[in-house]
Length: 412
Image (cartoon, rainbow, N blue to C red; front, side, top):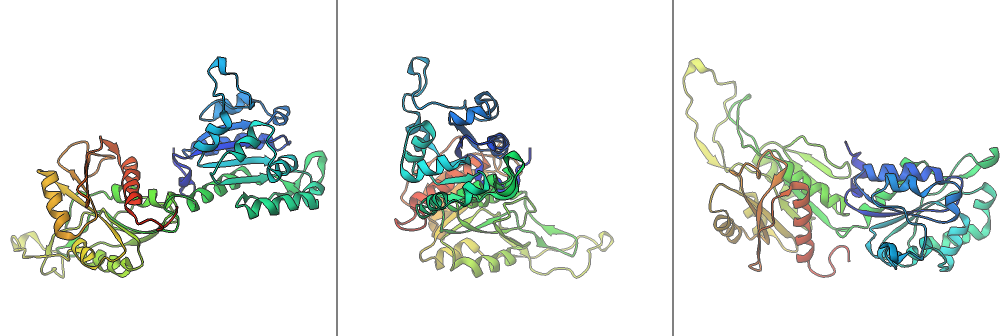
């Protein structure tokens, strides 16, 4: 299953989907399905009024956990005795679709008389409401005042659209299309992540050093690790620039800079380094390149060419020497003595966090979707997390980055 690039902020996030009692409640089924397909963990909360229009069983079948409809759970059946607290504290986002005039009024007034309103009041997570009602209700001053109040408190709103309403009327009040509600949810998550406000620069892929117009010196790096880091940083709210040699799919919100050689990567990274808060050097940069590039393809009948090599620019060392406020993450691809070699590289190049792995291992390193790493901190701490997917490892690395950032930097 392919996840639409603009929905990646939903992946792995816990979303409470509140459904209020309006005819548009049937569209919430599609919203639920789309968020689950995007990788979100969806917990449906249905009001008693909504059950006149949709069934809890439908949402239970499509969502990540059974739908809840009651604030007073039956503890003898093993249900959570305080579901609103669990749901509110555990949510990354609460989406209410449809949000009726009744629901908006209670939420704005701080009235908690069912599970959904109690959950809304028991959360510090961002909230997105998608109103739906008849045009006259939507235009009423009381409804608009309630929306003004909610917006002032930071609640996100997906305004209704013009179209056919219940009873055959036409006007503004129709619930926004499910795809638009889900896209808005992804946008809210992307902007409110724990890296919101941060500028993250990531490198990825193996550089290619030309021998002639056809051949090059290279390595087996696929770029998957660097792309996973860029993807995760964007999903967590950072403004991300990715300097890469790989042609992999990436979140369209990421600024992508395509390069090929170590020299090109060096120039692109140094140009953007000053404006970055975090730099993650996940690329496998060639250490050597041919001193001279043949202007035409080398022919076999001309004999074995003599390749004279010279060092490429040491990008990581250059960043370590220049860094001021930046937090610098390096990668070390090793084939033996992983921890020792990574520690030496870390000390020599002024890195704050070094991620090292044995690329000779069949389940880690180049061209696979998993990685087994050693993470070295400048404080002396050493971590050896278990074998993980590169996506999961990207989030682990960013967790460590977030913890190492000075207080007051980026998102709270």
